Image (cartoon, rainbow, N blue to C red):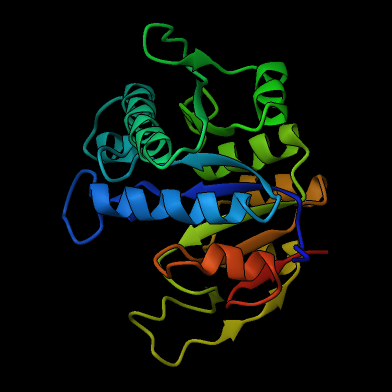
Length: 237
């Protein structure tokens, strides 16, 4: 079957792992996302993943209450490691070889990130899961996803969200919001569309990486979009 992209990076929000819970990790959801990744790999697509930590902790929450933003962001980075380990567990349960690479050194738990190691693991057929964000405070996991996509030479950055594409406003609160099938990176930036942060979109634009926004909650949607179907918004120049 013909696929549109052969090497992709999938950004999964921490909130997606909560499922119907108010906090933490719903193992059934992690398992379902793992199966979607497995099915996409069966199409011959090389996949790496960046995962957020918002289901456990957000660094900006500390700063908003007068705390130290750097410390808060470090705590958020640790949350992404927890989520990455959970996703790796779900993948290995269904026979998918996966590795967690962290931007923060913690050798007793997972390998440290380097581009050389990441490319070597990908070449060996493993799903590479990037944890720890960029390893620096003040940068979101969206920015980490764009950075890792560039470092991996990805053909596209897939952003799994709560809705099926990019809208002019939050469709949950604005039912009449306009939905876009295609946009350019500049249109996303100029219109202030809150699909990814400005740094992430600009980095993707500079490296000519399309951003594909889709619903992470639709089972099988990842593979459908890869093969030309499904429902998404594609940001590309």
